[in-house]
Image 1 (cartoon, rainbow, N blue to C red):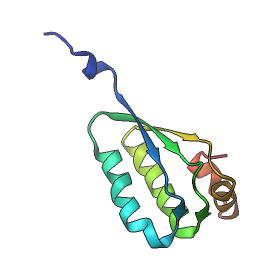
Image 2: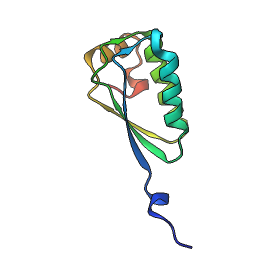
Image 3: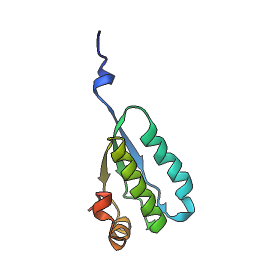
Image 4: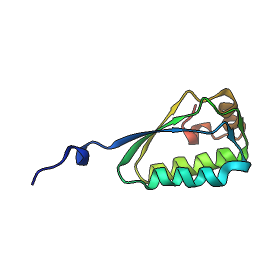
Length: 102
């Protein structure tokens, strides 16, 4: 039985976080993040976070739920250029280590 290359090598996905990571848009973002975790073959997700200019508690909590869900599905996450606003929000909430964003 031959094994196809795609059975060995997983998929790496880039995901751009929105400018406003706030309660106003967590519902739609939640659906997008859940789709990333649920998609077959996604084993590495690159979170592009440089555009985040606003982040509130609800937005950071959503990211924490996403990080935990990704861990449960054995998906690796990498943060790319997180904005100062996002880093500050995570730090104020004491979640930078839990998010792996420090």
